[in-house]
Image 1 (cartoon, rainbow, N blue to C red):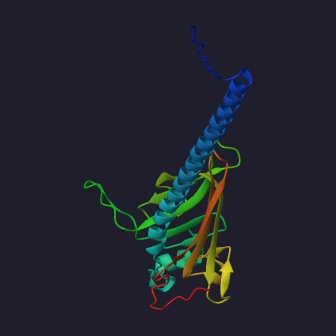
Image 2 (image 1 turned 45 degrees about the horizontal axis):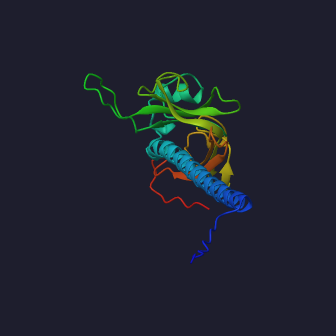
Length: 235
């Protein structure tokens, strides 16, 4: 007597194998793309955070300098200095020369970290743009001189505060006109012998990797711009 055994053998056909491989490839490709998107989003976010941090660090330095701006009126100068200043002759005196894209002023923000030097707190401070190697962009520079002399536009040390700057704009609050103006000169014109009560600044940088621009606008209040005790109200 012979026993017959029916053995059922099952398996994948070639078409089923190819279909499974195609589905797996699609899933793997989609997952890989999602991982790349997440990585790129993370890198872009970190880059933008670094941009904001760099701008805020530069703003903090400018805020400290402008917050300690001081002005000694012409009437408080000696007779000789007063005469030379009023004639626009070179003479050491306090100054605020603000323009649309640069600013020069005297401040009490200087810090002396060297025991061998006898620097005081007074200093000439300048902020301006210097062209960089990146096309169309610039570096935000700070000039600081611990000596207030007859030439308030030269001398001192230079510091690079911010790279990749695409825009730097200053405006100055005029209490008489009740609006922001683009130029302020304490040695000439209607603003002669006076400092502004507030300065508005807008600065923008471009990320070298993403080529995206980040901008911050802020206002600096000058507590006692003309040695008078009053409250400044901004719009």
